[in-house]
Image (cartoon, rainbow, N blue to C red; front, top):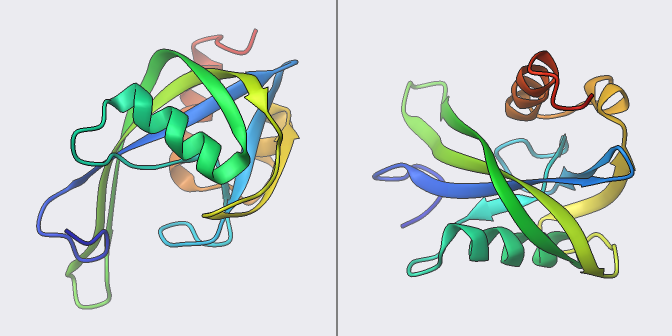
Amino acid sequence: MGKEYPKMPVVAVGALILQDHNILLVKRVNEPGKGKWSIPGGAVELGESLKDAVVREVYEETGLVVEVLELLDIIEVIRKDDAGNIAFHYVILDYLARPVGGNLRAASDASDVLWASVDEAMNMEITESLRAMLRKLKEKGFFG
């Protein structure tokens, strides 16, 4: 099943990676969100556990090995084209993670990677789904 114009929603994962009060951002190469900053993540492969998908996607995009800690949020992304057809429909499970190894680099679906504070991230061109999650987590006092 393709990710663009799918016949059913695509299950995906994301990783909010924290280190020294900063979060890891990746600049997206592909739609949805092409050219914007977001957290690493992607579609879950058939037969793959959610946590294994997080570890794989983070490594593929950033070169980091992470420990997956807890589920933070579930976000639904639905984008229609000009004709009203569903171009993208993702159900994204975003997890908190921390780096435990690897070497940071932009790879696969990321053209760049960087560490930023939450306040810095909120002033960047980030995806709307990341902006919504960061707002929600800030309101809950997650970042202190």
